[in-house]
Image (tube, rainbow, N blue to C red):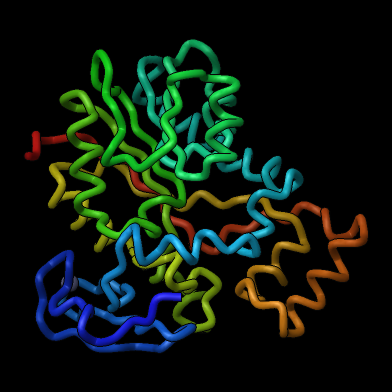
Length: 293
Ligand SMILES: [Zn+2]
């Protein structure tokens, strides 16, 4: 693994340029910093696609997300988001950033012209079987735009992983038509749960999650990328019982939560669906207000 030193720390807040940063916690060797000026919480070490790659190449990471049962439960969230988008735009050209195997695109229906990008070669291949050359395996920065720009771009569980969220959103801006819509889902670091459990909040998993947003910081990041927030929602999700101890284990195999996860995984009990809405997920719909360079 790449070692990280203070040499590659952010000298100022990447969102508001505030200089007085404080380090909150050290988690798995990474410094989690806070900007008192704008409330952004983020990984202080500046990561790049290259320094992140070894972590993503580890085959043990996040075994629950791709579990077929859990994927079925994610559909609850996808359906809600589809309803929300449909209120503003009923059809058109849509891009799902980090589309995985195309699960959200599948659910949208064929009155949409559906596109996606995906980093994982395996997932991208699965999506290509359904959407052909509308699926691009690679980063959003390299996404080849053909024809008209998009009416809608969705980013679910993407922005918190991005090495540079402002740059990523500027690319989204360039790919959208004037007044186009972006829908973003990230974890909410200001929810009560996160405030109570602090560094043990399940979403604090550096270097996978680099940015810990809330309503204010996500709004600010969007403003810097030419967007105006239209609505903010706290949509819950449905997960399987076994996912709860898995999330609490934070991907480690040497703790009690992981043992409980292993136990539940072997029984039908582990697949019981649980509806969860602790405002730990924030979904923002924003409109492209101005063109960015
Ligand atoms: Zn700041």
